[in-house]
Length: 287
Image (cartoon, rainbow, N blue to C red):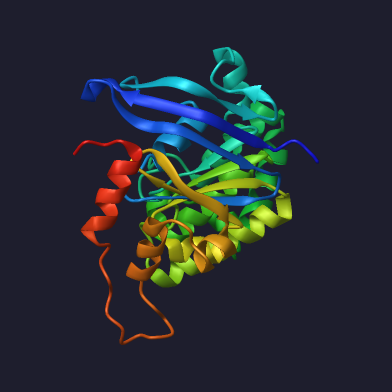
């Protein structure tokens, strides 16, 4: 059996701003090469904290208290800063959440796509330009030369998100963190972007951690899923197993609370308060 691309074991963290309140509680998960794993949970569940820990961008108010994050066997939490910088952006990259703000409004798209190619890969101006144009073609942008000459405000939200996806895959990373990349987009564009991320991931053989609060998105794109509540892993496994035969009462309640496309007239069922009370008791939250 081959070693996993990513292995998180016993990851725990606290918030110094909240007097040492736990925000990650003994989180463990693995990601194989070419796998898409969903990190799912409501606001405050810890999914974005895990993503930031992977990228080495945790705020100073968050302190890791235990565990390890091993990427190809290297513990990212103990690597020297200069080695971590070599990995970030090159071997691990990010598709950010909001395409409206993630791109620099004062620079053309070409400059933003080619900087990493020239600095990290040593490409010439011409080589970087050609690579950027090819990347835009891969994300189904019809006139890449025009887009390369454009500023972000000249593109639609969906186009900007495609540019960010191209940028994330530019350096052929082994791991991409997708931080709710469809949240700011309308439903039709969301579906296109999900298909695009999946096709790029398959074409490049990249592992993906997909952060989302939407089980419907998980069903469309993820091979496996980790469900979090209050920084604790509640359930995880293959997407098919978790969504069709959920074991935990919280997972069952979340699935029941979602819309049923086979029964459009059925009402939504809120998660019962008793489920949250059971969760807090399991985790050891007093209030």
